[in-house]
Image (tube, rainbow, N blue to C red; front, side, top):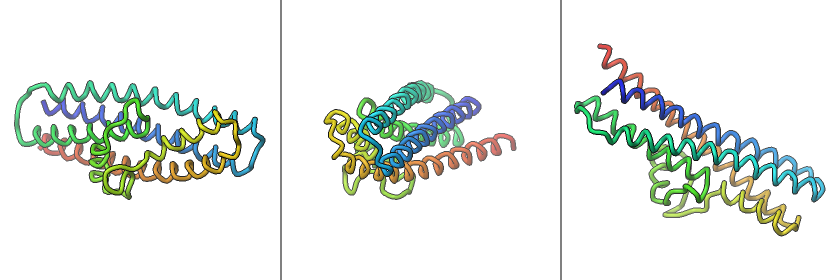
Length: 204
């Protein structure tokens, strides 16, 4: 049973890597778009860059959807009854919490199709011990989705006066992404540390 749970820990590390890759991709697209907006290119060029940004977001959401399905599969494996024991119990609990955190992070990055409730995101913020990512009390706008919405609105209205709002939302989005990256890096290190500790215990 311990070996099976250790296999699960590897699968969770893979999902964590997917989340980090999605954030990196979003950050790179955000920074590239900000750079282009600062150069104040023509309306047609900006519209093309906006569409490029949205296309990248769409591809990233597909990868996240697959990762969420993998998490569901892992969760089902953990819910299967098995042997008990101190090490197994601790590892099960740790992995169950990790799944909850990763689901919330992936849903936050992806958007309304999979987005969890603010109460679940509150759990993420507390577990990661990072700067405020979500809300002051119960709810705060998702900066990543706000940036995407601003880009869509600018394309739809065909009014380049909305560019300043897009820039503002992109800046907020980048700060949010940085916080999430720090949190996921912390989570990843803790997962690896837990795995190494368990391996050391069972090898004694």
